[in-house]
Image 1 (cartoon, rainbow, N blue to C red):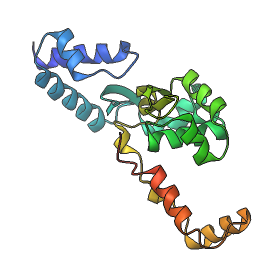
Image 2 (cartoon, helix red, strand yellow):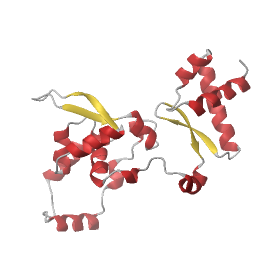
Image 3 (cartoon, helix red, strand yellow):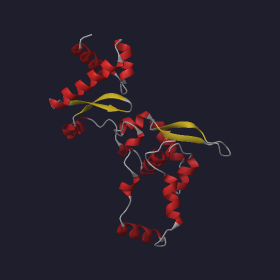
Image 4 (cartoon, helix red, strand yellow):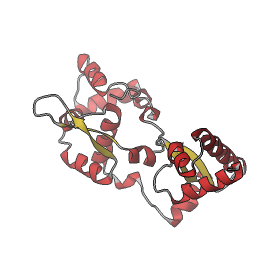
Length: 208
């Protein structure tokens, strides 16, 4: 199949696909080597980027998908708000953050980190498809383990969970830390408690 026809066929598949299209799936449908599909997808992405087209092709969540050009975001927002993180409550966002960085994790661990029950927030995130069950823990009672879903990667513009920004980027400066501690009535030096919390969250780049 000629390269121009491959690119044309891929455009059609990308338009109708309701999830990121993997190179493997496209190769199987087109009955050509996966290497040819990847080369055509990369060339298609370059063409759209070079011509500053309103549609851009990005690799995301293990596949490829069309996105509107970032420069036109304000126009798209005027037309329709299809999905928005503002629809998530603060509790849901906090819970989702804990799951994203600590996964796989149980409700008990989520609750201990946030200091409140995570039942309602977990149920909401499950209903939205942003998290999923990832098996059961070996601790007594074998509680369910939760992790983020492919939809989470897609909606937050990530290719893999390793693309999450490091937690150190969100660490408060000394002045802000003092204000937070003062407001919470905590002692200025948290000592081992702070270290334990950092260890509990873990390395954002590590996925169990």
